[in-house]
Length: 90
Image (tube, rainbow, N blue to C red; front, side, top):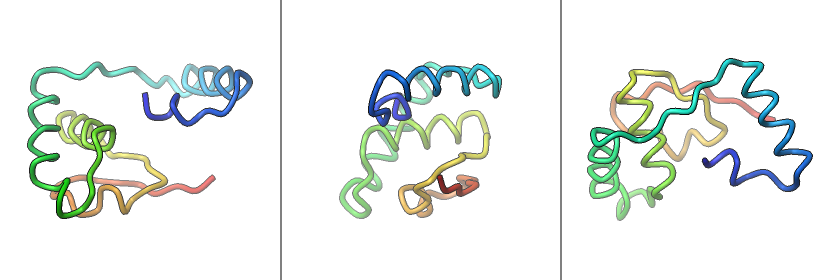
């Protein structure tokens, strides 16, 4: 959702969809566990670190699936225990 939110036009959206298919990326729908974990992260880090809803859902999903998070914004997640990240730049 957050990646789609960042596209600036239909061409970028089309390219994004093509790239996601090519990479074999799967859409993971938030489960009750992910939602609960996102709420816990928000309660813990919103005031102290400015954690926002989208980032909380992303972090909770990565943690639930024990996946490494590929992100261009490591500062949004580096304070969350046990999260594994790979930074990238465009």
